Image (tube, rainbow, N blue to C red; front, side, top):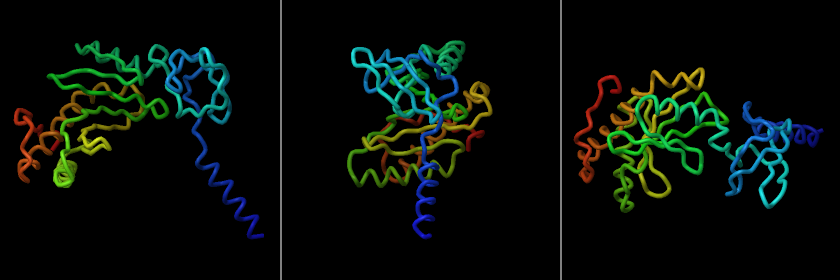
Length: 221
């Protein structure tokens, strides 16, 4: 009897961790990037969310998990939504090989990372604002990030495995296009978080970046 219960528990656990369904706008024939190859096409959609992908010059790869490929930009409605909005706002967005949207504001390079499996999650990132030189500085940076995260709304300031500091603003929206009226405030929040971390850095003797020109918006405090 115990073995039966254990088997059932194992099956439930496996089911709970199963691959989420494929994106609802994914169709047979859609162009995707998979395994470093661009121009691949979806051949078959399976009920478990996996797909069969036709890789040019290679052949069919069966049962590929939805997390293992990216929809090509021209077939990606979420990317088009972001690119069209940024263009209308006067930016000059570009799309990188991973399908992420890049744009510059006041000389700084921002990214919007399309969440294709969770389009209600909107995320803007300002990467590489600080290069960590050694372990002592890493601990100081973590203290500064902790201070900034406690003082600002929506923003996350964090370190990466490549010893850089990134700032992101993340929201849940009802519909993907609902980010539009909040876009400027997201940018302001990122700048506020950056400025707050810089203030903390100065407090602990880490002043080495020119961020004094950033103003902390009272809306984001």
